[in-house]
Image (cartoon, one colour):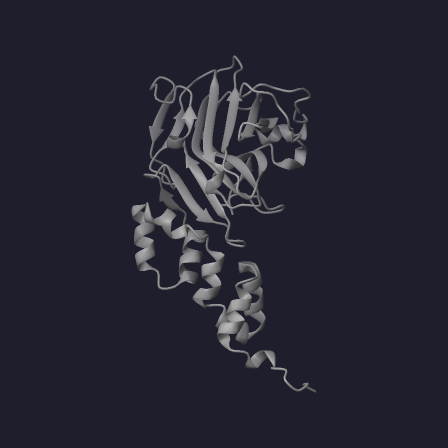
Length: 300
């Protein structure tokens, strides 16, 4: 029996329900919409999806021809949200892609090979630049042959969603002619704002995971020419071997970092193999920085 003055939930104005939904998450809205026509009707409101979109999403998209076209073509904030989640938009003159994590609406970026600093990448003897139909970017970098393999990427932490744990991953493939990338360990490291570092060793070949444990640095290393103050030890289950992504590429985890509220620093990532072994056939698409979700499939 209803008490005097109380209004049944199904009699609340749709705008009131939409406003309440906007304080949840996209995943919550999807679940509520599946069990109640009342929530399903309110869930399409722009009030809901405008709150889920980053406040600067229109500014980010407006700097890109593809993004500007998208802003002109969508009919609702909900349509914009899911379009950016499902179809990464090229920004910064095609050197990066921008998208959103579907479950949370948090930002994710991929730095293309063109946006990375790859040692000798513009020397035709060592690297070549090709178009690849499987890539979202105009060009990828393919290794012809080197001993010294070094890849660096940078992004400002202010571009990312605050108060979120992020992970960075090198996205790559092997060509048919690939060799020298089977057995040798590869050093990867990250620094954030010149103060926080994680460093560990990874392998190109997943088969090594069954035989040899990945090595963890036991002392400060100087991959960026400054002292190591924080370590994220490499463990077999942490993703420090290649994993197949949903888009067909492979990825290796470079490390995690927590993006603090109001933080405005430079995140730098490095992949380094300085062994005397010749290497060939690595195809680099880029480095992806995305919110970390335990148990999520790579590149999903």
